[in-house]
Length: 114
Image: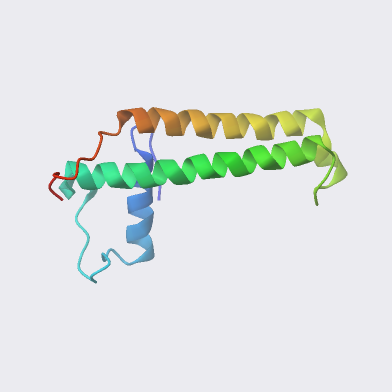
């Protein structure tokens, strides 16, 4: 699975799902291509992937704070300022990417067609 700059988080997740299920959906039927999904389905995959990205950013933030406090099961060399700052930067980058995706996601309406 290789993501490119124009691949959305939802498309990456959809591709990973397909690889994990040998290309079959939850009904055991062949999955359509990403472009074969409706706009609502692509939006839903992007929303789900964005939620996971934000949750991971929060976990990384918590790790950085634990490292900053000198706590946790991390080797002593991981408590250096450079390492802590890099971990914090990774969380910030994930969060920014997720927010960009969230802005691009169209609001799903109850009447939307799947």
